[in-house]
Length: 372
Length: 147
Image (cartoon, rainbow over all chains, first blue to last red; front, side, top):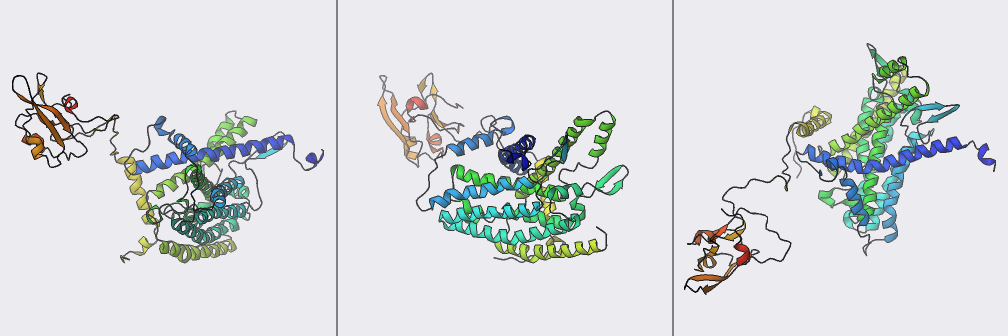
């Protein structure tokens, strides 16, 4: 019975970890209906329409009603599919989507007594590699679902998805390397913490050393690749409703389709959080907020209250940054039309890949010159 | 077909073009009024000449129709069915007056042909019903959308 103590897990750690996991899982589950609502209302507003505004205030409960509809829909498997893989595929794409958020820090740490709690489920020393590898797992769900559907459009969608993932995963991985070279760590906590230093000062305002200022080209390549990785417009060729009907989830309905949709929106959340963490300082406060916090400390906000305020502000900043990139997903979707398949491959292999390689060399040279 | 367009090097970079596109959509979101008509509360205002649901005009509760059969004759869709009868005062009147609305093409020729100003088309455009109601004489005499 004493083994639990020797492995270093005590009640405090367990409770803290349980609370963090519960927070992340509930947040990821809640983000789906909210994002569906944002997507529908946002697309309507961008197109001079109104969108769903009947159920609940501003139509907020529309997603809830849609979810109920999906759950109570008849869940039958048509004769021409492979039932086992057909039912497995939504889970295979949903579970990696949930797993990735574990390595993303959503605030810095807090010291309670003699314990330090990191606001991150797992501060892996290979955090970035973990996220990249798990996100590439989600393509298996897409391919499995499309193949099990036994439908030509679905197979087209799955094959496109596979080709697209492979091409863009490469540039995505390479685009981050520049940042990793500067920070010198694959830990997302370290990367977020390293972006707190000041790049230069404007009066009392410190412009932080965010990744976007150090790696602008890397950021552009990375965000382009995230759109391809999450199968969102302008790279939603696996779905391509005007050419291959609905692509890989053509044969899906009820909550099995819902699981695919949830996976898409959770992948969007993770991609946005990762973009915010890598290039916009993650949980680092917005420039100027640190001055507000310091003045609050001067006016008597001390001790644990100050620490919790700091953590809350950091989490709020992280949420705002993530929310902006999620809105960007919606905004871009209703602005840029879908790429043609050859254009997609051209962009991936002939533009983004050489550009990301060049970015690595230039970054390396600048580090050699001790500029970065 | 692949159409070659002349693009500048700056346009080929996409970045500026994407930003321009994003600005266009954001402009539409922020500054352009929505065009949605929220149907049950707001309604589109149709012209007075709109040809909608039929009705038979009545004076003092008696239909104007004398069953002269001009409207079923002129009707291109052949959707008006009249059975004529005789009143005690030897006046001709329709015993039955059914309109097969599913066949009706709302051309308004019956309205034009009618010498007694009896059959008319109102502005009502919500014509779906929750019952299997036939457009018979009683229904048409209810003076819906009278004009």
